[in-house]
Amino acid sequence: MSAAVLWHHARLATLVPDAQDGWGLIDDGAILTAGDTIVWVGAYRDRPESARDARHVDLGGLLVTPGLIDCHTHLVYGGHRANEAEMRLEGASYEAIARAGGGIRSSVTATRSATDDALLTMASRRAQALMREGVTTLEIKSGYGLSLEAEARSLRVARTIGRTLPVDVRTTFLGAHAVPPEYAGRADDYIRAVCEWLPVLHREGMVDAVDAFCETIGFTPAQTRRVFDAARALGLPVKLHAEQLSDQRGAVLAAEFDALSCDHLEYLGSDGIAAMEAAGTVAVLLPGAFYMLRETRVPPIAALREAGVPMAVATDHNPGTSPGLSLLLSAHMSCIFFRLTPLEAIRGITQHAAQALGLRDRGVLAAGLRADFAAFDVAHPNELAYWFGTNPCRRVVAAGVERV
Ligand code: NIG
Ligand code: FE
Image (cartoon, rainbow, N blue to C red; front, side, top):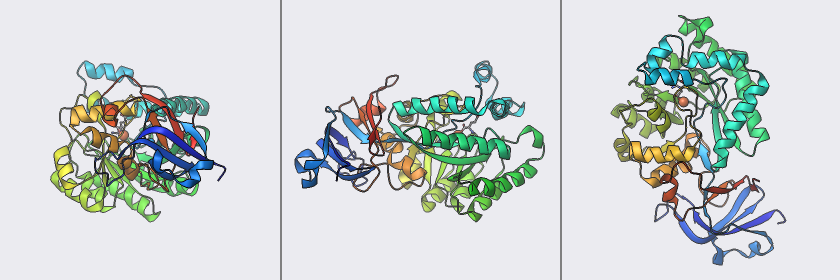
């Protein structure tokens, strides 16, 4: 087993689901990997015989968690919207700016006019910022192109990031993000176009999941259903920007399609919670957008917890509502604003984030899973949701290879 590596001298937070202490802490732990796979996890003194011939890497006593997973981002876009953020500080609402043709549409204009190189360079820099904190899997949505060609380009850029940087990228088609100017007043026609583009993009192997923005300033539940029908016809899983600004009963609709996740959820009602629970849909909480929009209504965390709906946390990085690039800050905010426990927050950026992407091969440290992990300069994993404005990540292993 020449490619075997024993990563030792670490405190592990395995986050296995049945951990008695919640975290799955193992003091003086070690991880044996072969290529891109974990073959054994445990206390160093219990290491298997086969570990003897493995290359030994001393992790210097750092705390090791599964590689972090940002399961909701919009990393590919041109320009930025600092001007709109300033308008909001002066009293304009997100909805009013969107209705006046700003918002997502202004990022569409900037994205369409950016060169391929510029889009890739900017998105790669954003990905690298997330990676520096220990992110090893990243979801990236399209949604600022809104034509077949421009959506394909965004998905291509996202996929290129996964090929050129040591991070696994999952791409989500979000054609139903806003109505582009050439379809103004013709949202139903635009949805027809989106449903026609999807098989083309899927054929080119560029789509892992399909998302939509179901909202008064986005698309109606009926329009969202058409997009989901098109996804289902291709066997693609769906996700939904649901109940962010109002209760559209988007979560109920998404659950009908066995959605992987419903995201935002500030206005989620009890019918939506029950439907998500029954469908096994993950609730993805996005405290960065909540913060940036100065929202006061929080998602129904206690009811989600009570119902046993898994909760994930993501950055929602985008130029309008969440220009942040720190998944650990999002975890921290989910505790402060939404009252998640630190354990829930950290499971939210590992185990449950993997579930929100439909990935069963990562999110916890266990034999048979991908060798993705991050090492932090903290003594206990609850500190990861405690400190903010500082990056405690010291080392990252992605698919069995240590990043330099
Ligand atoms: O997740 N809500 C819709 N989409 C993004 C915001 C997009 C934008 O304003 O550019 C979100 O918050
Ligand atoms: Fe989003």
